[in-house]
Image (cartoon, rainbow, N blue to C red; front, side, top):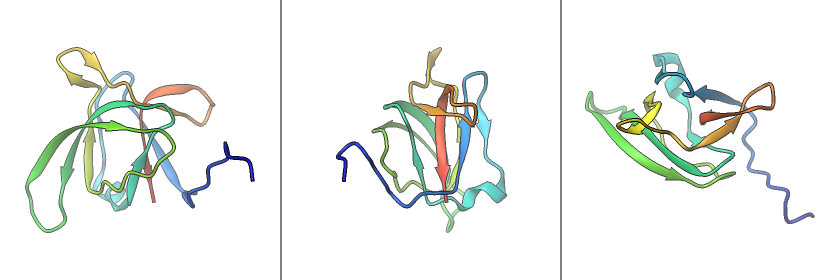
Length: 105
């Protein structure tokens, strides 16, 4: 097997594009088991845990091609601080890189 081929079993995902604005994740979209990126970078997210109504805001560094087991994402921010844009990138359905993450089932 080619060492550059990475399979992780993730076949169902949604691209969250924050190039132009913050993205709020609906209640129906919160059943995802983790997040992925295609280009490493920094992203700011809100998480709401199942057992509580508390929302936590985190700034994360994400490595590409890995499933990061982060659940309960409710918002993905366009900016990580001030006017510093999110640097994580993912390929959209048109094969163009956009700032954001992939929510994985």
